[in-house]
Image (cartoon, helix red, strand yellow):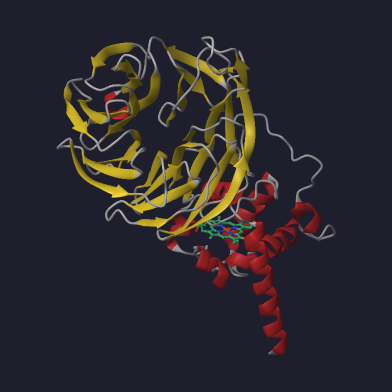
Length: 454
Ligand code: HEC
């Protein structure tokens, strides 16, 4: 009896220890692609259907393959472009051209311009497509209003006056659009069909909100603020629920619904990663190092990587005498950063880097002189998986708490071997990734072993 208690305690301690070791964060720059090219930059948009990245570059939009770092195409003549919105169901893309107050409509297949829409607003900045109303909304920084456009016909529906200077916006897919009001430190909700403001809510203590993202399921808004915090707001009541600390100079936010992570890309060269422990509890996992001025980003919803862009900045002589020196981009240094969580491979077809100087830990821990391959796998399971999944695969108390189901459950039975392989390799939810810790063959053997548990 006593012995059992000691074993239980030892396991419980190990478990706490391993929770820390398995913290799902550790985002790091996995790739840098120097893209070069003319123009500063603002927002970038990931196209999950086309597996492409649209990057605004001042007077044109660069279309990039983020897995290879190659330029696929270009949309020219978008004066002062800030953002790109995609309407997959219509096969159309839209850019907000801040300098001449227009929207460029382009074909998602050919990338050719198909229409140009003049709006009655000044400096259209953020832009989004709302699928529920099939409308495009621009948020016009200088005229302090939003413009609603019928995405199918290209006709302007009307302008929506706002309280102050709008920044980023997000649609909930159910008819509501939310936008940060930077100079009022508010979030304003807009009824997309009526093209009218519903409510404005204060973000205090958060000030000067810029980036905005949403957890659609739990209806949480994430506003990235310039006083170094992220305001998490209930999208139905307007209540600020939490204000996790972020880096300085945020300009974009994103939410990874599968990993329950909210991101903030900050100009100080960090990416703040916040975990949604529950819809009312949020904890900062880390401030991952990126690169200075990498203040905007896009989330790759297919592989969970985050794309950021930046460049080397140098000081240039003032434009006019008596003015201050200007910051300019050093030619040829515009760079795409691919940031991912350690252990999750960014690209399937990229050359695989062997972890340098490190043998897979499992190879060391598994008994070398084990008589059969099976007992080695069993030992591996014992040392790596049992703590959460239990000896019989039914799930330990700690594992169940994290969301592990019995391997014999109906849900698990539906999963194919390759899905189980992927989950073990890349992780899922609170299940840690074993990419760096196990070889593919070891994982394959473990999946087979799991299947044999009854
Ligand atoms: C720190 C706890 C923990 C450890 C250690 C762990 N897992 Fe998991 N595992 C989980 C959780 C939690 C889930 C459920 C993930 C989800 O669905 O969100 C899970 C799910 C899985 C699944 C998907 C099964 C299903 O029902 O959908 C597989 C396969 C799996 N784990 C294999 C392994 C293997 C193999 C190991 C050891 C190499 C391992 N796990 C180690 C916590 C853990």
